[in-house]
Length: 279
Image (tube, rainbow, N blue to C red; front, side, top):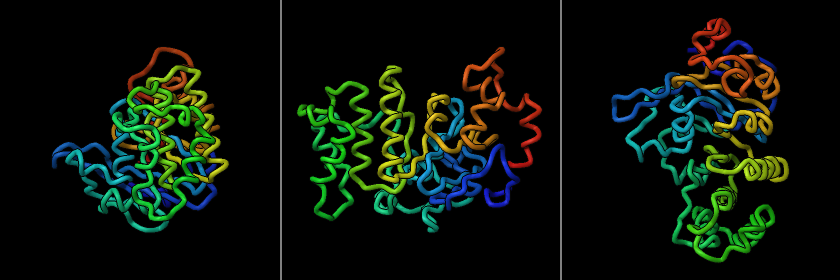
């Protein structure tokens, strides 16, 4: 498999900013038996928003866990390839050290601490920090999510949208350089989805936080992203600018509700066979 640096040019122009995150030809195995990622490569430019798309079971969440070091909690490991952040290799180091280096993952399903208050959850996000600016950063989070300031009870009583806001706010408390977001729209109404994605765009533009976004709502993800990757069966099968992917007929059919009967695999498409040399 060719790594990202030597792969032929994909659909649309490649990201122009220098990469903050580089995932090169990784394989991930669970329980020493189950191969989930099969030589996956991608890069995330500093200051950008990159979307990672694909059906359930494609390996999107596993990719985020490989980056954030959380595979160990599920008997998984990177058995081949490497993950580099800001030029330094991070695969194999402990999750708390990865957080200290500037990566924070917002987990699928929010994963807030239900029997703690909003404020306590936010303070928990700053557990790796030793500076004295935590109070100021809490006020910064409230400026993005004013509803959280009004919620003084236990976080478990928040609505789904408010819990998602709290999860993102907790990530901001770590002062991350890169946020990994896993399905931020899950379980939210269309109105709340638009609100959350609007805040994601603001965080990227105003704070300069780089974002790698895993999302089933491909249309919404591509509306905020600069670049995107499409995964299938543990591999990247298509990538390009968000604009190019949004106008790609295959992507329209599979993920944007474009037209025709839904096909089950990119492997049935001639365009997939042309791109097979990338993998």
